[in-house]
Image (spheres, rainbow, N blue to C red):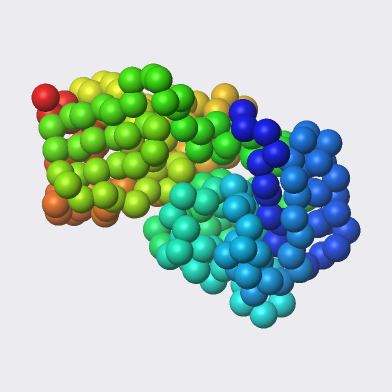
Length: 232
Ligand code: CA
């Protein structure tokens, strides 16, 4: 893992913010605080932030709006949302937000740090001397720059979408069940809803398929999960 990864905590409740900060710093992260979404967005412009931990209930613009604006400008930043309400989960998982992960309050800070580490693993690039380019038909994954192309067009993917795409292209034709995708992408310690897989697949389809309502490249394997159609 890279050293000194920067994590921005956007949370108006000071005691929760400090509590997260202390736990991140214990694990070697640089933690930066913002008590409003507006301030958080300003910080992201000036600092090279790797991951944003984003509370939903904030004074001013809420976490959903912050998430949306972040994704419009920085597709590759990692986003973990915090929520106090279980009814927010469906919204968090909504297509428009592109959240990488979420936690429901109250949470164990160690669990949050694990989620941050797991997300960073998803965001890691390969070393320059590794085999960097994987091509399957029209599609190309560049593991060094973490870029993804369909033909000559670069398609911007979130860290989670990129990890799923890489998993697929490295295993063409293989049927994955949701747990296998969860384990490979979010990590073995993931405790949560496998719906997060489906939402990410839906978003990927909307980005890469010619007709997302009739997916061709990412096939649904009924009763199991998903399969990348081998193109070569
Ligand atoms: Ca709050």
